[in-house]
Image (cartoon, rainbow, N blue to C red; front, side, top):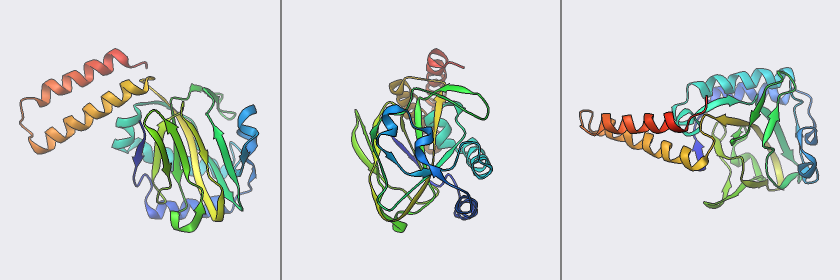
Length: 226
């Protein structure tokens, strides 16, 4: 399941965060890459634990805690501290798959990566190229979102970032361990949740609302690992 989450951050938050990020010191992006990924990764990023990364990361995490679409789609158990990268001058990231387990250098937290997330800080009009291309059972999708928007996709997916030929692509990237590790089960729960919300909005007193909600929670109870 690939989900676009609009307006995770407001335009004011995006502008404030960009001022912080653009004033920071960036390093070679291969510092967080595995062996295979390092061979195809060409970008810069903030070091893990950098004060700017911590400050902007806290803004992102606070926004996600209030985002109903993210909570419904991801069913998050743990969220990795957000990291930040920038592509310019032809930089790109070749096809790769994310590591199954990540450990935070700052907190020591280890987690399984069920979902990958990319949150855009530069709008599509600011740079050429730089599309995130995700390949999975649903096909190949090319993603380039407005600043403040985020995409969620299975961490098992092959993906790459096309070369940025003009301007600069500025993003946050991180991973989520879901309470429900199986993507197909998460998709069923998300679709059911959306359907329940639609019934509740269009017919608040519909007799199917309560039984459907019961089915949702019984499936979550069966599949969730907390």
